[in-house]
Image (spheres, rainbow, N blue to C red):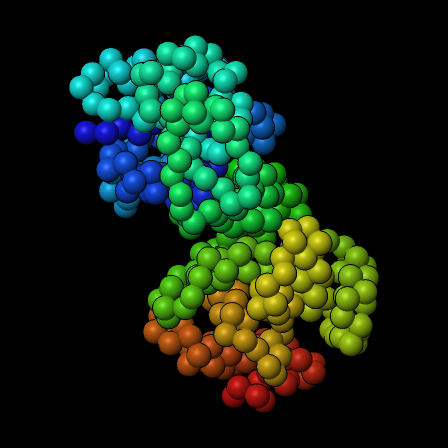
Length: 360
């Protein structure tokens, strides 16, 4: 059996890593072993090693032939050399063929690795090609490297940690958010109160579940919209209005309670680089609704009103949304209208009034 060694920071594991591993497994007809590094080069942003392993477990749980090896983690060393890892595998699997998988960017520096000659003898060095990347042909020839070609997925680990890219398995993103890992979630933590953060996470989770139950494309987009929907809620009202007037002057006469939704739409773009127009619209009108809502806007609006931490039994409304989001939205809208009227609250502001008239 061929054994493919795949070391790296995996901080966190992302779609590029998984794609690379699956392509190598198919090309080499072997088993792939992820070996996460104990210490990442991004020390200030790095997740604890057990969190990195937990995320790896989530990413590969349904992927046949992909495994995790804790040799480097359990070595007790902050820095592990590849040659030591390969020797370990040679001792553990003496009759198997060993392959060492590296990124194309490492090909040009491979001659600098520790005990490189022995490393290349013990394991076949395999690298994953990247369009437009120039490699040293002398290193490829000298160390008898093998190239694996496939669809390249350009992924920035830095942007993932900043919540500016979401090219990672859904379950890994859920873990990052739930455990407040990395720079992006630290920013969200500072922006929202503890109560508001818990609410936002619940809206994100429910929005994702509704999108998935309705077989909608890329349900992770709904999770992102839910996570960011209240970014403007806990900043001062004056700042909310300042952002509203700057980017949405047409709503300058909107009621004060709605300022935060417009501010949130601005902050999602400025802080996290969100460009998806549906996500922006969903944040922009999640509190009031409006007369022309995309399906994502309807789902975020509903999830915001019925997520489980709201303190009432919303199970019937959640079920309606999961059964049919379009019909469920109208049912939630009707329930919210009745709630507002029972509390003596006005529904005559232009956006809310237009929303009710359009959909009810």
